[in-house]
Image (cartoon, rainbow, N blue to C red; front, top):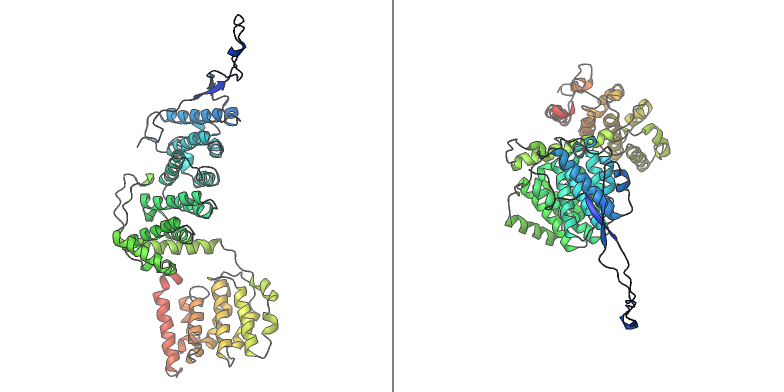
Length: 497
């Protein structure tokens, strides 16, 4: 495709008015004062050319005269096209071949507050995004997107400015390399600075743009969680037109999966009138909108239409990757440091079962969010204390103690295995109490693949294996529950251990 340029080729020169004042006195021979014009007027201004050169470009770009800045942007755009030399734009140009500070110039240009100059800055940025390597970088795309949202582009009332802004955003998505997060970063920034903005005009443009991106590139280019977040923001708007856009985004997601089921949590949050609106959209169009644009990195690649099953599998994979990414970046909780700041130490010593439950709740709360991620340390004393509570007569105390043990096993992991494994002989017999059976199974699940491997549960020295022997373990519920747990371990061994 040819680079996106204006219909009329931009010129690197502009005219600056140079006003002159005409003599308003009558001819000396006239003597007629009535011929004198009491309101002097200037004739048509004599144009003075604005010449932009590479040597003086730094000064021209920083000029206080918007016409000089505009001419500078047009000059740079011409320079990019000249270096491209009628070749197909494929982000093959280096910014240094055009202007040593090109990347910074683009950033400053998009911050221009003059409407006329901004239009030229947007055209320059569009040509830059189409032709230059730097535009493919996630950081560059995010900087450009932030300036569009925080500057005058998104809030403009000029149709031409909005059209070029839309095309620039599309181009940033289009040129992103394989594996890039640019598309999701763009939706994130629109969500943060566009959909939540105070200016209705800006919000409306931002909302429509998200929908247009989904329709143009297809939902597979974007992370469903990002689009879901945008949908939830939009349907919560007080503006009915913006709410309608949010419903349309959800409808496009439902079409991708050929069902509302994968997104049922979002559907359930809608008002009944909005659910009816969604159903109406799906009745009118049941299949996903075919993408009208393709990522540049996928050109020439035979792309099969994604089936609903493949889309659902991709959704589940993305959600799992997001969880792993969040877990990896989340700092581990220093539980041994936080615990003394809670009521645990005081209340765990109380006789009343309710006080002990409160103490254990404080301990579990101090462990942070799930999945647990806790710093390694010396937990021997704490685990001995929890082991004693397993024999408490009240099932809630026992259940909470099991939850705390499971939290430590999951959060600390393998380093705590030598302290956790001896607890199995006290934990397994609790299966006989139906009130704590679920808590026992949950505790063992948290141990498996985190603190203990499968073979460690089956060691012949351990009482865990002997619990399967009918001669040694008379309670059928215990034997059945242990077998169920071992089956769960085998089924989940691909992901947990």
